[in-house]
Image 1 (cartoon, one colour):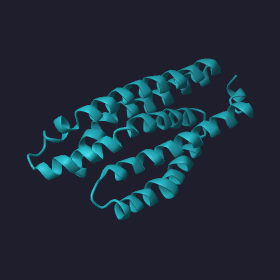
Image 2 (tube, one colour):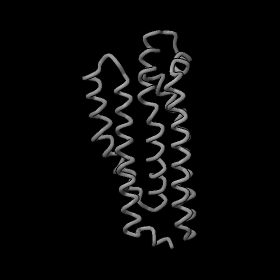
Image 3 (tube, rainbow, N blue to C red):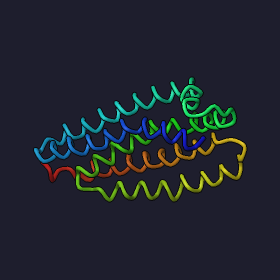
Length: 177
């Protein structure tokens, strides 16, 4: 069930991953040209795209998870478990998309360490411990395991927004003007 869902998540994450690269490239070009406002607009427009895409995917797979999982198996138990996991995990497409865009922006600004920090913190403080707790507290379902990924990405989003606000407040982007 987990392997099947990971296949779909890998496909769904093509858009957020592409946005990471796009934001990094377009923002770096705009920052290099001294167009800070365009770089910031690029970040927020990309966030709008990934939130829209992720929300559409999440609503679709909340409604039709069986359609996705049953493409790979006829085993009823695997389908049930896969649907639970997919329903929990698919929301990560929204949250991860947001922090992917911020990571691209931070890299364009020369602050790639921020991407490293938010990912490590999210893994250590949320993803791993919550997935472990979910496996112990809810051994009969994979839904909480999927939700643990969302918690990790949500923590990353919070860290990214705080870091972004700090960069703006400290005028760290002014060096590009």
